[in-house]
Amino acid sequence: MSAKKIFAPHVGIRCFLRCIFLLFILQLQTSFWADAQPSVNFPLRLSANRKYLSDHKKKPFLIKEISAWGLIQALSETDESAFIDSVKRKGFNTLLVSIISFDTRFAGNPPNWQGISPFKTQWDFSTYNSAYFDHAGRFLRMAKAKGMLVLLVPCYLGYKGDGNQGWWDELLSPNNSVAKSRAYGQFLGKRYKDFTNIIWVAGGDNKGDSALYGHMNNIIKGIKEWDKHHLWTGHFEPAQGTNWSSGNKLYSKYIDIDGLYDFTESALGADAPQYKTELSHYGKGKMIFQLDQSYEHDIPHGEDNENPQWIRRKNYDGLLSGCSGTSFCPGQKDNRGYVFTNWQPLMNTAGMAQMLNCFKVFGSRRWQGLIPDTSNKIVTDGRGKFGTINYVCAAQTASHSTFMAYLPVGGVLTLNLKAFNTKKIKAWWYDPRNGKAWLVGKFAADGIKKFSPQTSEDWLLVIDNAALNLHPPGM
Image (tube, rainbow, N blue to C red; front, side, top):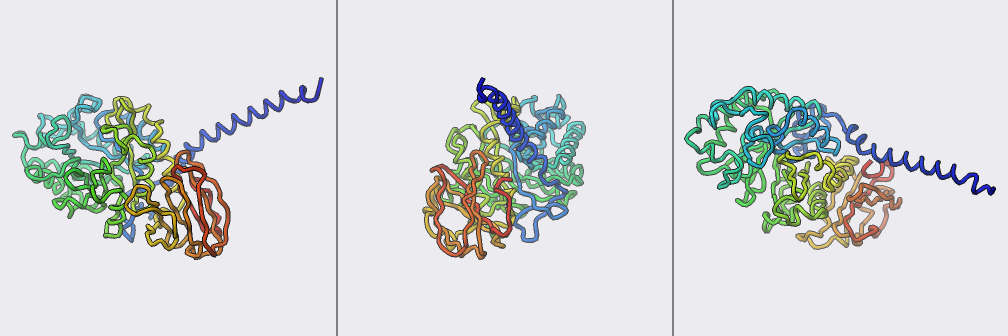
């Protein structure tokens, strides 16, 4: 019998076991990364330069938000806990939630939670039911224990004219008054003022103007009478020209952090693509972030929801254009992530995987130090035309430790290496589709060099000061 025949089975077994081991390690890598995320010491506050959030120990906090509107109302506390654990494993650290939900599409017979209504009298905002709001308090404590920030909407108004979602028509009914809205706000402010993992969100797909202004304004004022410490942002109606939280002049005085909400990029009009308006708002004095963005496979089935590269482009462009947070909502063609009728399959969509890749690569570098670069002093050619969707957005840390550029469609990028102000640089390509990094090499920072990725798909170029010996992007 030949040696080949004697040893081949053993070689095969070793190779098989090695493959199984490697697959096991790869499977655990995502879980380990999520579990190893820095612990959060709430409360969060604006950084000294007001560009990003930091926790009580001054650790930077990048908002990684999942839109989970019906979470408090739709699920049992056991399922709420399971949901939070699942999205945390996918890298999310922030939940966008309405404390009371009245949307006929949601699970759990809204507005009731487990048969308990938020109000004792239908739908009188002065008759709040403590049993419901006790549950909301337990949810907030659970979220904090799991390291989750909650963007909390006190009263989701909903689209005007659509009586199947939101509270706008109930607020305007004879059951309610501006005085009752003020009392409801006071109730919330007093009850939740000591919960340290909250940022309040005004509005909810509605400008809150005309007759609704008295209600929304007094809910906010009522909350602020008791709760003078929590930050505020706003979620208004893009179709009414209020894409930015601060863009709604009725409520701009309340806005501490400026969220960009554009359900479809076309809603920005002349300010599209999205990076144009982000670059414009960066440096105006408020922290900016992407709020409630990119609903995977949701209606309308346009590029914003159906094209994975389109979704990636908005994420990466935003984080390179001054945003200190981004957002996402998973979905399937027949299963929307925010209604919670069947949420478990949505944890493994393609969109969830690519969001984790995004979180990992920015988490592996000093994202809080990135300053958008539009000067062309570093990128001398190959950037494309500003104002088009294929323009290459880029940013560099003030310390010159890291430079990043997102190429939407591959191509050749020409860089002036002298602009890195260091002796040597180390260049990487990062694949946003699978989260893998390839080392291009180390180079003397003393001339012009062209960089081109492996394919014509989208790529992230990462260049580090070689002396820092940083880990590969995404690790």
